Length: 340
Image 1 (cartoon, rainbow, N blue to C red):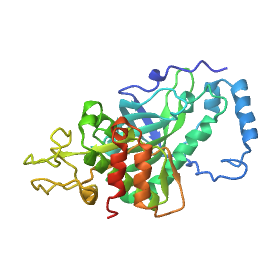
Image 2: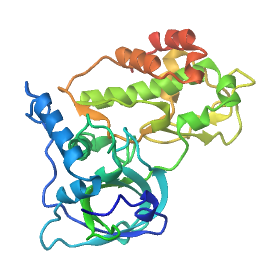
Image 3: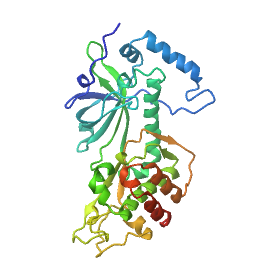
Image 4: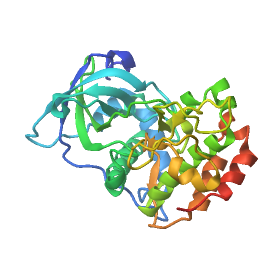
């Protein structure tokens, strides 16, 4: 019998250096069948999970499912800087860190280590290995479809790897790792927290949601549906106006002197004395957004879902207070906005 599960902080901590290899294989994205997601009947899958929980300790079970790196694979190292999303949770199948590597010199990375040992090992109804593999397979499939948006509206994706994680009292374990670009800035939840969100005028709020809807529209046209369109997963890019001209007529608006830069070109060279944030102007002056955390995407038939439908979905799904405070007014502006 192997030792007890080590403390998470003994494996992943600031300054930790980990060795990375090419994988021998990347898990394929499974197809849904009448017998379940993996072609395994749900009852058989549940029995298998129950049996594995009762017969094998969590650490031993994880060692049995070690990921093999490619033979003679060239290796490189990453260095963990600070945690972004870590811990044990039923909904967290990866340990997410900001990292650096000499292989990507000058670039901060987001490193996602898919460690089933610290994911859902008390829930007997979930196959953690299946869900970790599914998350890796999804990212591997989704990012190429969104190649035109990488570096603009989503992070650049550097690939799927295998990372060697030293574990006390046993040989090092090998786990799937994904590396992507780290996007600086505040998410919308941070920008709109508390009084700032209450003071922001309704047209500016509508412009934020319009930009999110347009980006979701770009996803659906490429055959990708994002299940986790929350304000915490959306980075907003803002620039101050050089001449400090107001960009809305609301004197208390938190964004009155912030220019919502163009979402594709990222240029902020127009500085009129004032900009009317009426529906017909939303598309031009909506902020540039970046979506992060694409674990919860799924592939759909390529479709050109109407922009109006995307706007209505976003306004309904974003349940933050700053949206709900003016929900009907925002919906009204979005309903009348141009499709350009």
